[in-house]
Image 1: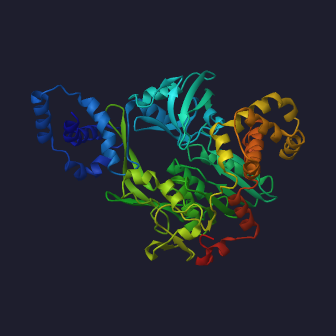
Image 2: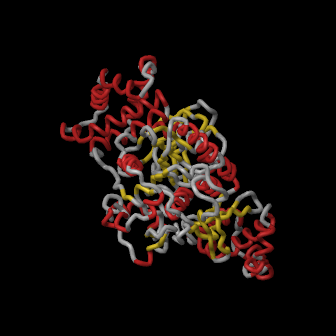
Image 3: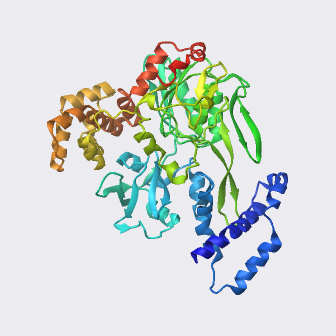
Length: 549
Protein backbone atom coordinates (compact mmCIF):
# COMPACT_ATOMS: atom_id res chain seq x y z
CA UNK A 1 0.00 0.00 0.00
CA UNK A 2 2.86 2.35 0.84
CA UNK A 3 4.50 1.76 -2.54
CA UNK A 4 1.21 2.32 -4.31
CA UNK A 5 0.82 5.60 -2.41
CA UNK A 6 4.18 6.80 -3.68
CA UNK A 7 3.21 5.87 -7.25
CA UNK A 8 -0.27 7.35 -7.22
CA UNK A 9 0.29 10.41 -5.11
CA UNK A 10 1.67 12.82 -7.73
CA UNK A 11 -1.19 11.83 -10.02
CA UNK A 12 -3.88 12.32 -7.41
CA UNK A 13 -2.37 15.53 -6.12
CA UNK A 14 -2.25 16.98 -9.62
CA UNK A 15 -5.95 16.26 -10.07
CA UNK A 16 -6.83 17.65 -6.64
CA UNK A 17 -4.86 20.83 -7.18
CA UNK A 18 -6.20 21.35 -10.68
CA UNK A 19 -9.81 20.85 -9.63
CA UNK A 20 -9.29 23.07 -6.60
CA UNK A 21 -7.75 25.81 -8.70
CA UNK A 22 -10.54 25.66 -11.24
CA UNK A 23 -13.21 25.85 -8.55
CA UNK A 24 -11.39 28.16 -6.10
CA UNK A 25 -12.95 31.58 -5.68
CA UNK A 26 -11.11 34.79 -6.37
CA UNK A 27 -8.21 33.38 -8.42
CA UNK A 28 -9.76 32.75 -11.86
CA UNK A 29 -7.98 35.80 -13.25
CA UNK A 30 -4.60 34.43 -12.19
CA UNK A 31 -5.45 31.08 -13.75
CA UNK A 32 -6.17 32.73 -17.09
CA UNK A 33 -2.85 34.59 -16.93
CA UNK A 34 -0.95 31.41 -16.20
CA UNK A 35 -2.95 29.04 -18.38
CA UNK A 36 0.12 27.77 -20.15
CA UNK A 37 1.80 26.82 -16.86
CA UNK A 38 -1.08 24.62 -15.78
CA UNK A 39 -1.61 23.08 -19.22
CA UNK A 40 1.68 21.20 -18.90
CA UNK A 41 0.38 19.15 -15.96
CA UNK A 42 -3.24 18.90 -17.10
CA UNK A 43 -3.40 15.72 -19.19
CA UNK A 44 -7.01 14.59 -18.73
CA UNK A 45 -6.91 11.55 -21.05
CA UNK A 46 -3.89 9.92 -19.45
CA UNK A 47 -4.93 10.74 -15.88
CA UNK A 48 -8.50 9.61 -16.44
CA UNK A 49 -7.32 6.36 -18.01
CA UNK A 50 -4.95 5.58 -15.15
CA UNK A 51 -7.52 6.36 -12.46
CA UNK A 52 -10.09 4.19 -14.22
CA UNK A 53 -7.52 1.41 -14.54
CA UNK A 54 -6.78 1.49 -10.80
CA UNK A 55 -10.46 1.68 -9.90
CA UNK A 56 -11.33 -1.31 -12.06
CA UNK A 57 -8.32 -3.58 -11.78
CA UNK A 58 -6.30 -2.93 -8.61
CA UNK A 59 -6.29 -5.92 -6.25
CA UNK A 60 -7.68 -4.06 -3.19
CA UNK A 61 -10.11 -1.24 -2.55
CA UNK A 62 -8.45 2.16 -2.23
CA UNK A 63 -9.66 5.18 -0.30
CA UNK A 64 -8.39 7.89 -2.61
CA UNK A 65 -9.48 10.76 -0.32
CA UNK A 66 -7.56 9.37 2.64
CA UNK A 67 -4.53 8.72 0.45
CA UNK A 68 -4.48 12.35 -0.68
CA UNK A 69 -4.84 13.69 2.88
CA UNK A 70 -1.94 11.55 4.10
CA UNK A 71 0.45 12.16 1.25
CA UNK A 72 0.01 15.79 0.19
CA UNK A 73 2.09 17.04 3.18
CA UNK A 74 4.88 14.63 2.22
CA UNK A 75 5.10 16.00 -1.30
CA UNK A 76 5.06 19.62 -0.14
CA UNK A 77 7.80 18.86 2.39
CA UNK A 78 10.07 17.99 -0.52
CA UNK A 79 9.60 21.46 -2.06
CA UNK A 80 10.68 23.88 0.66
CA UNK A 81 10.23 24.42 4.41
CA UNK A 82 7.14 26.63 4.15
CA UNK A 83 4.85 25.19 1.47
CA UNK A 84 2.06 23.56 3.47
CA UNK A 85 -1.26 21.79 3.14
CA UNK A 86 -4.21 22.91 5.28
CA UNK A 87 -6.92 20.26 5.68
CA UNK A 88 -10.49 21.48 5.55
CA UNK A 89 -10.88 20.62 9.23
CA UNK A 90 -8.15 23.12 10.15
CA UNK A 91 -9.21 26.03 7.95
CA UNK A 92 -11.37 27.61 10.65
CA UNK A 93 -8.49 27.67 13.11
CA UNK A 94 -6.17 29.09 10.46
CA UNK A 95 -8.67 31.83 9.67
CA UNK A 96 -8.98 32.73 13.35
CA UNK A 97 -5.23 33.12 13.71
CA UNK A 98 -4.18 36.75 14.09
CA UNK A 99 -7.70 38.15 14.10
CA UNK A 100 -10.41 38.11 16.75
CA UNK A 101 -10.53 36.01 19.91
CA UNK A 102 -11.19 32.38 20.64
CA UNK A 103 -11.36 30.36 23.82
CA UNK A 104 -8.62 27.86 24.52
CA UNK A 105 -5.17 27.47 26.06
CA UNK A 106 -3.33 29.77 23.63
CA UNK A 107 -0.79 27.70 21.72
CA UNK A 108 -0.05 27.08 18.07
CA UNK A 109 1.22 23.62 17.21
CA UNK A 110 2.21 21.32 14.40
CA UNK A 111 2.07 17.54 14.20
CA UNK A 112 5.62 16.23 13.85
CA UNK A 113 6.38 12.51 13.99
CA UNK A 114 2.86 11.97 15.35
CA UNK A 115 3.60 14.32 18.23
CA UNK A 116 2.09 17.72 19.06
CA UNK A 117 4.95 20.22 18.98
CA UNK A 118 4.24 23.74 20.21
CA UNK A 119 5.63 26.28 17.76
CA UNK A 120 4.26 29.43 19.36
CA UNK A 121 2.69 30.44 22.65
CA UNK A 122 0.25 33.30 22.27
CA UNK A 123 1.12 36.33 24.35
CA UNK A 124 -1.52 37.02 26.98
CA UNK A 125 -3.00 33.53 26.86
CA UNK A 126 -3.14 30.99 29.71
CA UNK A 127 -0.22 28.91 28.41
CA UNK A 128 2.08 31.91 28.19
CA UNK A 129 1.28 32.84 31.76
CA UNK A 130 2.17 29.33 32.96
CA UNK A 131 5.53 29.24 31.23
CA UNK A 132 4.70 26.76 28.48
CA UNK A 133 7.24 27.33 25.72
CA UNK A 134 7.81 26.87 22.02
CA UNK A 135 9.45 23.51 21.50
CA UNK A 136 7.44 21.76 24.21
CA UNK A 137 5.77 18.52 23.08
CA UNK A 138 2.27 17.83 24.41
CA UNK A 139 2.19 14.11 25.24
CA UNK A 140 -0.93 13.87 27.41
CA UNK A 141 -4.25 15.69 27.69
CA UNK A 142 -6.32 15.04 30.83
CA UNK A 143 -4.20 11.97 31.54
CA UNK A 144 -4.71 10.39 28.13
CA UNK A 145 -1.67 9.77 25.93
CA UNK A 146 -1.91 11.60 22.60
CA UNK A 147 1.64 11.06 21.32
CA UNK A 148 2.10 8.30 18.78
CA UNK A 149 -1.62 7.55 18.65
CA UNK A 150 -2.33 8.77 15.12
CA UNK A 151 -4.67 11.47 16.40
CA UNK A 152 -5.50 14.12 13.78
CA UNK A 153 -4.83 17.81 14.30
CA UNK A 154 -8.52 18.72 14.43
CA UNK A 155 -9.02 16.23 17.26
CA UNK A 156 -6.12 17.80 19.17
CA UNK A 157 -7.69 21.23 18.73
CA UNK A 158 -10.98 19.89 20.10
CA UNK A 159 -9.21 18.53 23.16
CA UNK A 160 -7.38 21.77 23.92
CA UNK A 161 -10.10 24.27 23.13
CA UNK A 162 -13.27 24.52 25.16
CA UNK A 163 -15.59 26.77 27.06
CA UNK A 164 -13.99 29.70 28.82
CA UNK A 165 -13.23 28.96 32.48
CA UNK A 166 -13.06 25.18 32.09
CA UNK A 167 -9.90 23.31 33.05
CA UNK A 168 -7.62 21.08 31.01
CA UNK A 169 -4.48 19.25 32.16
CA UNK A 170 -1.60 18.71 29.79
CA UNK A 171 1.72 16.96 30.24
CA UNK A 172 4.60 18.21 28.12
CA UNK A 173 7.99 16.82 27.29
CA UNK A 174 10.58 19.59 27.23
CA UNK A 175 13.89 19.05 25.41
CA UNK A 176 16.65 18.41 27.93
CA UNK A 177 14.21 17.48 30.73
CA UNK A 178 13.70 13.79 31.48
CA UNK A 179 10.38 13.92 33.36
CA UNK A 180 7.12 15.21 31.96
CA UNK A 181 5.97 18.64 33.17
CA UNK A 182 2.30 18.91 34.17
CA UNK A 183 0.22 22.05 33.65
CA UNK A 184 -3.31 22.67 34.87
CA UNK A 185 -4.69 25.30 32.50
CA UNK A 186 -7.88 27.32 32.82
CA UNK A 187 -9.16 27.99 29.32
CA UNK A 188 -9.73 31.62 28.51
CA UNK A 189 -10.19 34.15 25.74
CA UNK A 190 -7.04 34.21 23.69
CA UNK A 191 -6.19 37.80 22.73
CA UNK A 192 -4.35 38.25 19.50
CA UNK A 193 -2.91 41.66 20.23
CA UNK A 194 0.11 42.76 18.24
CA UNK A 195 1.57 45.19 20.76
CA UNK A 196 2.68 43.61 24.04
CA UNK A 197 3.81 46.79 25.75
CA UNK A 198 4.67 50.44 25.13
CA UNK A 199 6.50 52.52 27.74
CA UNK A 200 9.24 55.10 28.21
CA UNK A 201 12.78 53.81 28.69
CA UNK A 202 14.20 57.25 29.42
CA UNK A 203 12.88 60.79 29.44
CA UNK A 204 12.72 60.87 25.64
CA UNK A 205 13.23 57.26 24.42
CA UNK A 206 10.21 55.00 24.12
CA UNK A 207 9.93 51.26 23.51
CA UNK A 208 7.19 49.35 21.72
CA UNK A 209 7.26 45.55 21.60
CA UNK A 210 5.41 44.08 18.61
CA UNK A 211 4.82 40.32 18.82
CA UNK A 212 3.22 39.75 15.38
CA UNK A 213 1.89 41.54 12.32
CA UNK A 214 -1.88 41.20 11.95
CA UNK A 215 -4.95 43.11 10.82
CA UNK A 216 -4.89 45.23 13.99
CA UNK A 217 -1.15 45.94 14.14
CA UNK A 218 -1.10 49.41 12.59
CA UNK A 219 -3.99 50.63 14.73
CA UNK A 220 -2.36 49.27 17.91
CA UNK A 221 1.05 50.65 16.97
CA UNK A 222 -0.24 54.14 16.15
CA UNK A 223 -2.17 54.20 19.42
CA UNK A 224 0.99 53.23 21.31
CA UNK A 225 3.05 55.86 19.50
CA UNK A 226 0.47 58.51 20.36
CA UNK A 227 0.61 57.59 24.04
CA UNK A 228 4.40 57.80 24.08
CA UNK A 229 4.43 61.05 22.12
CA UNK A 230 2.31 62.59 24.85
CA UNK A 231 5.02 61.53 27.33
CA UNK A 232 7.75 63.35 25.42
CA UNK A 233 9.11 60.61 23.16
CA UNK A 234 11.49 61.76 20.40
CA UNK A 235 13.27 58.43 19.78
CA UNK A 236 11.82 54.94 19.54
CA UNK A 237 13.05 51.38 20.12
CA UNK A 238 10.93 48.83 18.22
CA UNK A 239 11.37 45.36 19.71
CA UNK A 240 10.77 42.60 17.14
CA UNK A 241 12.61 39.86 19.01
CA UNK A 242 10.64 36.64 18.90
CA UNK A 243 8.22 38.12 16.34
CA UNK A 244 7.56 35.32 13.84
CA UNK A 245 5.92 37.60 11.28
CA UNK A 246 2.39 37.60 9.91
CA UNK A 247 0.57 39.86 7.47
CA UNK A 248 2.54 41.44 4.61
CA UNK A 249 0.02 44.27 4.39
CA UNK A 250 0.44 45.02 8.09
CA UNK A 251 4.23 45.31 7.95
CA UNK A 252 4.07 47.45 4.78
CA UNK A 253 1.68 49.82 6.57
CA UNK A 254 3.88 50.04 9.65
CA UNK A 255 7.23 50.62 7.94
CA UNK A 256 5.48 53.14 5.65
CA UNK A 257 5.11 55.45 8.66
CA UNK A 258 8.90 55.74 9.02
CA UNK A 259 9.91 56.39 5.40
CA UNK A 260 9.66 59.31 2.96
CA UNK A 261 7.41 58.82 -0.06
CA UNK A 262 8.42 56.48 -2.91
CA UNK A 263 11.05 54.50 -0.99
CA UNK A 264 11.34 50.80 -1.79
CA UNK A 265 10.23 48.69 1.18
CA UNK A 266 10.52 45.17 -0.21
CA UNK A 267 10.07 43.32 -3.48
CA UNK A 268 9.05 39.80 -4.44
CA UNK A 269 10.13 37.70 -7.39
CA UNK A 270 9.89 34.07 -8.48
CA UNK A 271 10.20 31.80 -11.50
CA UNK A 272 6.57 32.32 -12.46
CA UNK A 273 6.07 35.66 -10.71
CA UNK A 274 7.48 38.86 -12.12
CA UNK A 275 9.17 41.27 -9.77
CA UNK A 276 6.69 43.26 -7.72
CA UNK A 277 7.86 46.33 -5.80
CA UNK A 278 6.28 47.68 -2.63
CA UNK A 279 6.96 51.39 -2.16
CA UNK A 280 6.17 53.77 0.68
CA UNK A 281 3.07 55.77 -0.18
CA UNK A 282 3.49 59.22 1.34
CA UNK A 283 5.83 60.84 3.84
CA UNK A 284 5.41 58.82 7.01
CA UNK A 285 4.11 60.26 10.27
CA UNK A 286 7.33 59.38 12.14
CA UNK A 287 10.05 60.74 9.85
CA UNK A 288 11.49 62.82 12.68
CA UNK A 289 11.82 59.89 15.07
CA UNK A 290 15.22 58.26 15.48
CA UNK A 291 14.74 54.49 15.29
CA UNK A 292 16.42 51.39 16.70
CA UNK A 293 15.02 47.96 15.81
CA UNK A 294 15.77 44.90 17.97
CA UNK A 295 15.90 41.45 16.33
CA UNK A 296 17.04 37.96 17.22
CA UNK A 297 17.15 34.46 15.77
CA UNK A 298 13.36 34.13 16.19
CA UNK A 299 12.48 37.34 14.31
CA UNK A 300 11.08 36.07 11.02
CA UNK A 301 9.20 36.92 7.84
CA UNK A 302 7.37 40.25 8.27
CA UNK A 303 9.78 41.20 11.08
CA UNK A 304 12.65 40.76 8.65
CA UNK A 305 10.88 42.85 6.02
CA UNK A 306 10.54 45.67 8.55
CA UNK A 307 14.15 45.45 9.73
CA UNK A 308 15.47 45.13 6.19
CA UNK A 309 13.54 48.18 4.97
CA UNK A 310 14.73 50.31 7.88
CA UNK A 311 18.33 49.16 7.43
CA UNK A 312 18.58 49.36 3.63
CA UNK A 313 17.02 52.82 3.57
CA UNK A 314 19.49 53.97 6.26
CA UNK A 315 16.53 54.91 8.41
CA UNK A 316 17.66 53.38 11.70
CA UNK A 317 19.91 50.93 13.52
CA UNK A 318 19.35 47.18 13.74
CA UNK A 319 20.57 45.68 17.02
CA UNK A 320 20.73 42.07 18.20
CA UNK A 321 21.50 38.84 16.35
CA UNK A 322 20.89 37.53 12.83
CA UNK A 323 17.19 37.00 12.23
CA UNK A 324 15.52 33.70 11.35
CA UNK A 325 15.70 33.90 7.55
CA UNK A 326 12.13 33.21 6.40
CA UNK A 327 11.74 34.95 3.05
CA UNK A 328 9.49 32.71 0.97
CA UNK A 329 6.16 33.99 -0.34
CA UNK A 330 3.19 31.64 -0.11
CA UNK A 331 -0.08 31.92 -2.00
CA UNK A 332 -3.07 30.15 -0.48
CA UNK A 333 -4.90 28.19 -3.17
CA UNK A 334 -8.33 26.87 -2.11
CA UNK A 335 -9.23 23.32 -3.06
CA UNK A 336 -12.68 21.98 -3.87
CA UNK A 337 -13.27 20.31 -0.46
CA UNK A 338 -12.57 23.38 1.68
CA UNK A 339 -8.91 22.60 2.22
CA UNK A 340 -6.07 24.70 0.81
CA UNK A 341 -2.47 24.58 -0.33
CA UNK A 342 -0.07 27.33 0.67
CA UNK A 343 2.40 27.14 -2.18
CA UNK A 344 5.68 29.04 -2.27
CA UNK A 345 5.68 31.14 -5.45
CA UNK A 346 8.34 33.83 -4.84
CA UNK A 347 11.01 35.18 -2.50
CA UNK A 348 11.19 38.39 -0.51
CA UNK A 349 14.11 40.73 -1.20
CA UNK A 350 15.16 43.79 0.78
CA UNK A 351 15.65 47.10 -1.06
CA UNK A 352 19.38 46.42 -1.52
CA UNK A 353 18.62 43.09 -3.22
CA UNK A 354 19.26 40.70 -0.32
CA UNK A 355 17.18 37.54 -0.27
CA UNK A 356 15.73 37.18 3.23
CA UNK A 357 15.40 33.39 2.92
CA UNK A 358 18.22 31.33 4.41
CA UNK A 359 19.40 28.28 2.43
CA UNK A 360 17.53 25.00 2.75
CA UNK A 361 19.43 22.93 0.18
CA UNK A 362 20.65 20.50 2.87
CA UNK A 363 17.11 19.32 3.55
CA UNK A 364 14.25 20.18 5.88
CA UNK A 365 15.73 18.38 8.89
CA UNK A 366 18.91 20.44 8.72
CA UNK A 367 16.85 23.58 8.18
CA UNK A 368 14.85 22.92 11.33
CA UNK A 369 18.06 22.46 13.30
CA UNK A 370 19.32 25.90 12.33
CA UNK A 371 19.08 27.33 15.86
CA UNK A 372 21.00 24.35 17.23
CA UNK A 373 23.63 24.73 14.51
CA UNK A 374 24.03 28.43 15.25
CA UNK A 375 24.46 27.61 18.92
CA UNK A 376 27.15 24.98 18.46
CA UNK A 377 28.92 27.17 15.88
CA UNK A 378 29.03 30.00 18.47
CA UNK A 379 27.13 32.36 16.19
CA UNK A 380 24.84 33.34 19.06
CA UNK A 381 27.69 34.21 21.38
CA UNK A 382 30.61 35.45 19.27
CA UNK A 383 30.49 37.93 16.40
CA UNK A 384 33.82 36.63 15.09
CA UNK A 385 32.26 33.25 14.29
CA UNK A 386 30.25 34.85 11.45
CA UNK A 387 32.11 35.06 8.15
CA UNK A 388 31.02 36.63 4.88
CA UNK A 389 32.02 36.19 1.28
CA UNK A 390 32.27 39.24 -0.97
CA UNK A 391 29.22 37.96 -2.86
CA UNK A 392 27.14 38.48 0.30
CA UNK A 393 27.94 42.18 0.58
CA UNK A 394 25.25 44.67 -0.46
CA UNK A 395 24.95 48.44 -0.35
CA UNK A 396 22.27 50.53 1.32
CA UNK A 397 20.90 53.65 -0.32
CA UNK A 398 23.51 55.63 1.60
CA UNK A 399 26.37 53.39 0.46
CA UNK A 400 26.79 51.45 3.70
CA UNK A 401 27.71 47.75 3.53
CA UNK A 402 25.13 45.24 4.74
CA UNK A 403 25.20 41.46 4.49
CA UNK A 404 23.06 38.80 2.86
CA UNK A 405 23.08 35.03 3.13
CA UNK A 406 19.71 34.66 4.82
CA UNK A 407 18.07 36.70 7.54
CA UNK A 408 18.90 40.28 8.49
CA UNK A 409 22.35 40.84 9.93
CA UNK A 410 22.26 43.53 12.65
CA UNK A 411 24.40 46.66 12.60
CA UNK A 412 25.38 45.93 16.20
CA UNK A 413 25.73 42.35 17.42
CA UNK A 414 24.62 41.48 20.95
CA UNK A 415 25.46 37.95 22.12
CA UNK A 416 22.81 35.83 23.76
CA UNK A 417 22.88 36.38 27.52
CA UNK A 418 23.33 33.21 29.57
CA UNK A 419 24.39 34.93 32.78
CA UNK A 420 23.04 32.99 35.74
CA UNK A 421 21.41 30.25 33.66
CA UNK A 422 23.07 27.40 35.55
CA UNK A 423 21.86 23.98 36.72
CA UNK A 424 19.86 25.45 39.62
CA UNK A 425 18.08 27.95 37.38
CA UNK A 426 17.23 25.25 34.82
CA UNK A 427 15.85 22.96 37.51
CA UNK A 428 13.58 25.73 38.82
CA UNK A 429 12.38 26.87 35.40
CA UNK A 430 11.69 23.33 34.14
CA UNK A 431 9.11 22.93 36.92
CA UNK A 432 7.65 26.45 36.50
CA UNK A 433 8.36 27.14 40.17
CA UNK A 434 8.92 30.87 39.67
CA UNK A 435 5.56 31.35 38.00
CA UNK A 436 3.62 29.26 40.52
CA UNK A 437 5.22 30.91 43.53
CA UNK A 438 4.67 34.40 42.05
CA UNK A 439 1.03 33.61 41.32
CA UNK A 440 0.32 32.25 44.80
CA UNK A 441 2.17 35.12 46.46
CA UNK A 442 0.34 37.72 44.37
CA UNK A 443 -3.02 36.10 45.07
CA UNK A 444 -2.45 36.04 48.82
CA UNK A 445 -0.89 39.51 49.02
CA UNK A 446 -2.96 41.24 46.32
CA UNK A 447 -4.51 43.82 48.62
CA UNK A 448 -1.12 44.93 49.93
CA UNK A 449 0.63 44.71 46.56
CA UNK A 450 -1.91 46.83 44.71
CA UNK A 451 -1.25 49.70 47.08
CA UNK A 452 2.13 50.09 45.37
CA UNK A 453 1.34 52.26 42.36
CA UNK A 454 4.80 52.21 40.77
CA UNK A 455 7.32 49.49 39.99
CA UNK A 456 9.83 51.13 42.30
CA UNK A 457 7.36 51.04 45.19
CA UNK A 458 6.49 47.43 44.42
CA UNK A 459 10.15 46.40 44.35
CA UNK A 460 10.77 48.17 47.66
CA UNK A 461 7.83 46.33 49.19
CA UNK A 462 9.10 42.95 47.96
CA UNK A 463 12.61 43.64 49.23
CA UNK A 464 11.33 44.79 52.61
CA UNK A 465 9.25 41.64 52.97
CA UNK A 466 12.11 39.39 51.85
CA UNK A 467 10.10 37.65 49.13
CA UNK A 468 13.24 36.15 47.60
CA UNK A 469 14.06 34.36 50.86
CA UNK A 470 10.52 33.01 50.91
CA UNK A 471 10.99 31.76 47.37
CA UNK A 472 14.22 29.94 48.22
CA UNK A 473 12.49 28.28 51.15
CA UNK A 474 9.70 27.24 48.75
CA UNK A 475 12.04 25.57 46.24
CA UNK A 476 13.77 23.68 49.04
CA UNK A 477 10.39 22.27 50.08
CA UNK A 478 9.91 21.19 46.46
CA UNK A 479 13.07 19.09 46.66
CA UNK A 480 15.38 21.40 44.71
CA UNK A 481 18.96 20.99 45.92
CA UNK A 482 21.72 23.51 45.27
CA UNK A 483 25.09 24.74 46.39
CA UNK A 484 25.74 28.23 47.67
CA UNK A 485 27.90 28.86 44.61
CA UNK A 486 24.98 27.95 42.32
CA UNK A 487 22.61 30.21 44.24
CA UNK A 488 25.05 33.11 44.14
CA UNK A 489 25.49 32.69 40.38
CA UNK A 490 21.75 32.45 39.63
CA UNK A 491 20.49 34.89 42.29
CA UNK A 492 20.23 37.99 40.12
CA UNK A 493 18.41 36.18 37.30
CA UNK A 494 16.05 34.39 39.67
CA UNK A 495 15.33 37.59 41.56
CA UNK A 496 14.59 39.49 38.34
CA UNK A 497 12.18 36.85 37.06
CA UNK A 498 10.46 36.53 40.43
CA UNK A 499 9.84 40.28 40.62
CA UNK A 500 8.78 40.36 36.95
CA UNK A 501 6.13 37.67 37.37
CA UNK A 502 4.75 39.26 40.52
CA UNK A 503 4.65 42.61 38.71
CA UNK A 504 2.81 41.00 35.80
CA UNK A 505 0.19 39.56 38.14
CA UNK A 506 -0.39 43.01 39.60
CA UNK A 507 0.27 45.40 36.69
CA UNK A 508 0.17 43.24 33.56
CA UNK A 509 2.77 43.59 30.81
CA UNK A 510 3.37 47.19 31.88
CA UNK A 511 4.86 45.73 35.04
CA UNK A 512 6.53 42.69 33.53
CA UNK A 513 8.60 44.10 30.67
CA UNK A 514 10.18 47.08 32.43
CA UNK A 515 11.54 44.67 35.04
CA UNK A 516 12.78 42.14 32.46
CA UNK A 517 14.29 44.81 30.22
CA UNK A 518 16.00 46.75 32.99
CA UNK A 519 19.23 44.76 32.57
CA UNK A 520 18.57 43.61 28.99
CA UNK A 521 21.85 44.12 27.09
CA UNK A 522 20.15 44.62 23.72
CA UNK A 523 17.75 47.25 25.06
CA UNK A 524 20.54 49.02 26.90
CA UNK A 525 22.68 49.06 23.74
CA UNK A 526 19.80 50.72 21.90
CA UNK A 527 19.47 53.33 24.64
CA UNK A 528 23.20 54.02 24.50
CA UNK A 529 23.21 54.46 20.72
CA UNK A 530 20.12 56.66 20.64
CA UNK A 531 21.36 58.81 23.50
CA UNK A 532 24.56 59.38 21.52
CA UNK A 533 22.45 60.89 18.72
CA UNK A 534 22.89 58.39 15.93
CA UNK A 535 21.00 60.45 13.39
CA UNK A 536 20.02 59.27 9.92
CA UNK A 537 23.05 60.86 8.30
CA UNK A 538 25.42 59.31 10.83
CA UNK A 539 23.81 55.90 10.36
CA UNK A 540 24.28 56.08 6.60
CA UNK A 541 27.99 56.81 7.01
CA UNK A 542 28.73 54.01 9.48
CA UNK A 543 32.03 52.41 8.59
CA UNK A 544 32.01 48.78 7.57
CA UNK A 545 34.06 48.05 10.69
CA UNK A 546 31.07 49.01 12.80
CA UNK A 547 29.15 46.01 11.46
CA UNK A 548 28.56 43.32 14.11
CA UNK A 549 30.22 45.48 16.77
